[in-house]
Length: 218
Image (cartoon, rainbow, N blue to C red; front, side, top):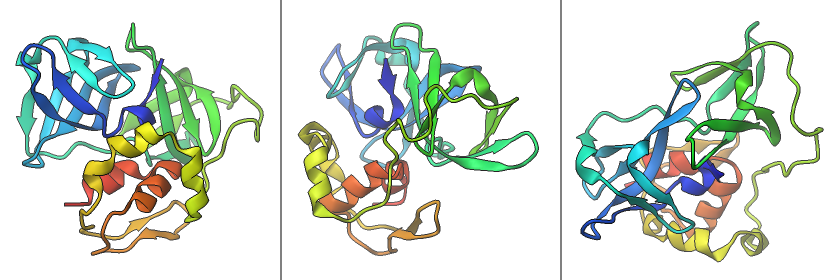
């Protein structure tokens, strides 16, 4: 199993010649399957990689067995993490924080909404940064049994984040934000023109805002 949160910002490497293709920025999910990995290169263009071309989802990198199918585009992909989650009656349930996939079948297994885990089969639609759930909700675990991500700027939090994650995201340090990033509560996570620091990366990981940090920094 692999979660989207752990995939973000991992380097993508071509096994045939050792080329560093780019860094994971997003994914594409179609009919409950992981179909594409969206990476970005030094030119900031999106690179669409067929998920079936992945040789391994490693802890420190994603390796490709057939890099010939990489498609470069300047059209930004819709974000997934941070998407609003609603019921069919239009009631907002929260924000999508993670998706877990099978690395063998590429099938989506669970989603995490504001700290609660649900079976992926609960999703009725998943388009345009909005997710709609169907029927009555039955979380896989009772409320409070899972870690709930809460915004924080306490430097002590860094002790709870594996050093591997900090290393994988070091390429973001020193970038500048082109616009302000808000939390789902309306609180400001980072201001426009602010420079990316290690502390900001950790806070972005904890609040599910890492995709925004990647997308809105240069």
